[in-house]
Amino acid sequence: MQQQQATISVRLTSGRRALRHGRLSRLVFVLAFIMILLSAVSLAYVGNIASREADAQATEKQRQLLDNVLVGRMQLMSRDLYSIVHWDDAVTGLVKKFDHDFVTDQLIYWLDLNLQAQKTYIISANGRVFADIINSQAQFSRRSLPDQDPLMHLSRQAVDRFMALRVPVEEGFGLKTISLSQVNELAATAVMSVDGQPSLVTAMVVTPDDQESLPSRFDPIIVVAAKTLDSALLAELNQTLSFQNFTFEQPGEKDPTRTMQMVAGPDGKPIGQFVWRGSQPGTAVWSVVMPVILAVCGLMTVITAFAAHRIGNLSSKLEESEEHNRFLALHDNLTGLSNRFHFHEALDRHISSLPQNQFAVLACDLDRFKAVNDTYGHAAGDAVIRAVANRIAATVGTAGMVGRVGGDEFVILLNGFTDIPRLQILCRQIIASVCEPIMLDNGVMTSVGVSLGVALAPASGSTNTHLMASADAALYAAKEQGRGRAVFAHELASAKNETATPEKDDSAHRAA
Image 1 (cartoon, rainbow, N blue to C red):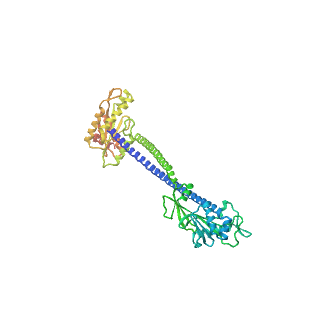
Image 2: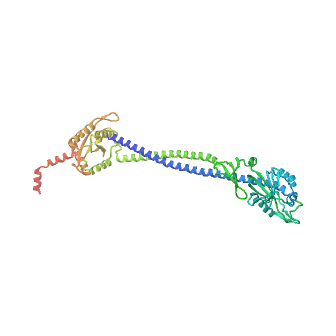
């Protein structure tokens, strides 16, 4: 029965170990999950920053490209206009004397041939409009522009640029020699609204080419050419840009799904915005980051599972080793019963609970065991010891604890009952069980007996030493009385008291 208790204890211990193993594994998984989650969040955060930065850089590059294309197109317009206004005939027909026929017969022809602007204006520095040329048709109105008109702003810029490049000549002023690459230093350009339409505009002062010169006192004449930002011009610009859904719109609310580039006129007021669906390299970043996140999380999960399994196994092995060492420290190697240390430890615990919880101690010693050892050898003796241990443990059952404290010496700590009749029955059962024949490994039958000494607590002692001495004394008495029997320590003490005679007491008194 005690072996069954040991088996149950082992199962309970294994269950507790499995529970601790599961808890440890879960703890490892929880910590690893937190690490994996933090790693995934960190990678996602980095990926988000990288994606947004990639999109921002792509947008900035597209805007720079748009600015470069616009500047390049307006420089090209300025060069074409320069070939028309840097001309002696233009000085004669526009500056020295405004000639309508020169405008209609020659200027419009060259404008159509070189510039192909939808609108051209001939303006004096003081804001007087000599002619409006719209779609190759000239209108001579002699109207004046208000000071805040965008055309006036651009005309003043053109005059300022001319003044910076003019040079004195014998009869007045001329223009400093410039190359085609320096034409932009003479021209004033802008994206602006002309008659309510967004346009690319360039303005330049009329200057002499070879023979003519500008009078010392003259009112500069500015030619302003405008190309409307219509679908045809936008398509032409987009041949270089290759933007998706490229268009020009009036100022409006910001659309996060599209890229916008606000445009302001020479007076600083917004006139509209270029709009297109920009490239999003951030999506490509995510296509790289997401597999990395999944791969890292998957790898960390596998590593965590492996580590948790290994840690759990190591923990279980350590606990098994500790349990085994603890078992070896408290139990007899041959029988699995409690050893001397474990038994006396339990005895001390029970003594500390006296007198409320009474118990009994039974000292057991085998009879005829030496003959078995001498006849059949120590291996047979060990087999007999194991068989006897099993029989005693099965007989005692849950009523107490059985221990082996010597070669053929056993002890029983009985706390299930302490009444004399039941103790006598138990002793008879133990003696009968031990005396049954034992078959050895070689098939030989043998047998041994057992003698018992019983000490009750606290009647036969209330200390470890006193109780064990009382049980041993009762055991010796059982062997002296013929072996194979049980003697109670309190009966032995009573018998000794009865054998003490009055004559001995009187003789002792007389001797005294």
